[in-house]
Amino acid sequence: MTTVGFLYPGHFAEDEFPRMEVILDTTIRLVVNRTEPGEDDRRPDTLRKLGEPERLAAGVEELRRAGVESVVWASTGGSFVYGWEGAHGQTTALARAAGLPASSASLGFVQAVRALGAARVAVAATYPEEIARLFSEFLATAGIDVVATHSGGVTTAAEAAAWGPDRLKELAVAADRPEADAVLLPDTALHTTAHICDLEELLAKPVLTANQVTVFEALRLARRRTWAPQLGTLFAAREAPPAPVGWRPAGE
Picture (cartoon, one colour):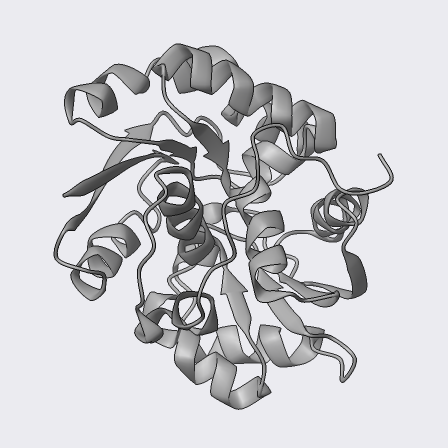
């Protein structure tokens, strides 16, 4: 049995994780501990408060008791707003608190793009324009070429959680570009698990969604490989070997 843990802010789309657990190998267990979400809006200062070390450390003990092998902070916005170095500092503090390998949804996107071998990506973000731009800048710092960034202008996680498949498709299509090797949907408040394959069929390319990527990252840290094509190309391909601890993109 491989057990991995997640710190998820609030109650917006945490039901994505038991849904993915059903799809994955029966020897994989996904354990979610909800952190206090605070204010529900997408401003940089609010998102930074969401990912404060004390807030994350408070949720670690329950995951440790569950016997998890890795911990991922399941908030993209609550990690990339710290910038590239800040996001690494955040997960280093989380790893120390947990005594386990740790990462975040934002860093998971970088690893997932690398696993796909995608050189260019398009970002389909529900976030307001300022926040969407910060995510694209984060990816660029990691050496990923962002060819387009589309903002959905959603100001709260609650609003994003209410989106259905039609709005997801509209967002993805609006962001996509012919030169993009993959399309990224970075909001962990979105319900995407049931729609990843449909999105990939619509766009004819890999689609990476936040909760999907978060699970991939937790399993990568636990050094567990699995094959689950219902979760899209990311889980249908043979993953690249885990990146070494402390990895930085070339040129830094």
